[in-house]
Length: 242
Ligand SMILES: C[S@@+](CC[C@H](N)C(=O)[O-])C[C@H]1O[C@@H](n2cnc3c(N)ncnc32)[C@H](O)[C@@H]1O
Image 1 (cartoon, rainbow, N blue to C red):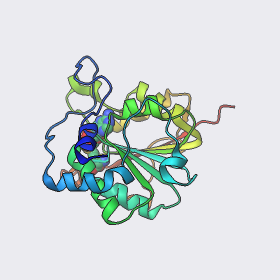
Image 2: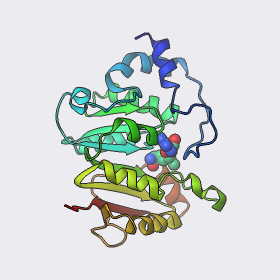
Image 3: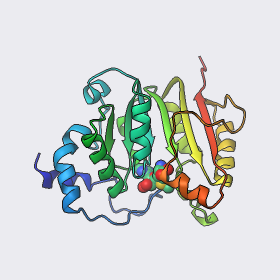
Image 4: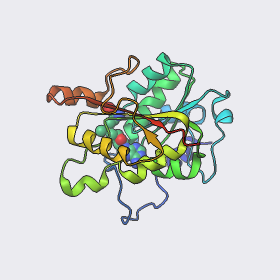
């Protein structure tokens, strides 16, 4: 595919393009593609990236192996994503992010460092999960420092709401996990509360979880710590109902 066509497709990031009726968990800012970004897209998009399609993903075709698949939603600049993929090579990772600069940055890192167990898509994660991810097929979800949407009137934009948590749960295989970390305490408490109402999920820790050894600090974690925010970790698992 020509680079121009790749860029055109990368710039389509949601199904209901331009319709403001759906509440979104993100705001798009700078959408300009620099010559450097264009080079990265031309070199690496076809190998490490994929596009939205209204059909179930074939993980084996995407990764070339049958390893379990972990999805990270909102990876930002993606430095943590790359590091986790290196530290836990027994998993395949799908990174979903709408932020253009971050998407291209991680694409470049994957290509330059030959990190072979990560694939990226630039699209609204809600649409990707609803249309491309079969139920019961995912080993884990990583959601690190989701936008807190601090003002009360913006809380409806929060990614982690009851409906989304249920959607994540339906995509998990039995025993699969959801791992969220945030520096926004009230959001963390809210997610704990929502998750306690979700029958498809259990919280093995009964409250906040201890940190895992394999997660390096993210950009937004650093910012939160500079403001002396507490870092709260939430680890939920798919309930074995049957
Ligand atoms: C506060 S940043 C955190 C980035 C990174 N995880 C970190 O800790 O540094 C949240 C990211 O989630 C992305 N995001 C929010 N809603 C999204 C959605 N529905 N689909 C894809 N990405 C989303 C935003 O674009 C943003 O880059």
